[in-house]
Length: 123
Image: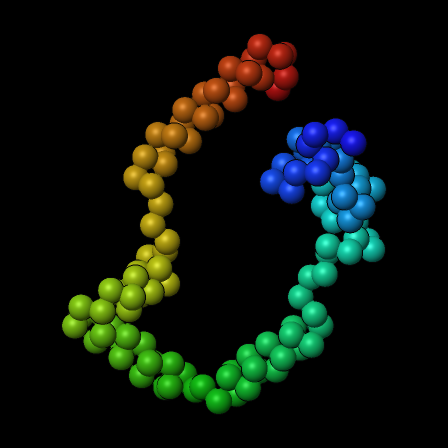
């Protein structure tokens, strides 16, 4: 037994061991959980069915007039200074905010990709 094996504060990578539940066979070739992996529990089916049922009930209960009334209330809340209401309205109408330098960063990335492809002879 090495000095690292008994230390609980040392990661499995530092020890050089992989627990049984995380063997490479528990993942497919793309690194995703493989069928039968014990760590790949996912959401239990009853949860998904319950959410689907709640959504169906909400769709039946809420009329377009109800949604219009709720939307108007949210606009009023935003006008009164409710930052969460304002953010929700902006996210749903204009879209989520993106970094202002996104366009220039995308341009730089495209140039880099062209350079790499040009050097490797790819098209």
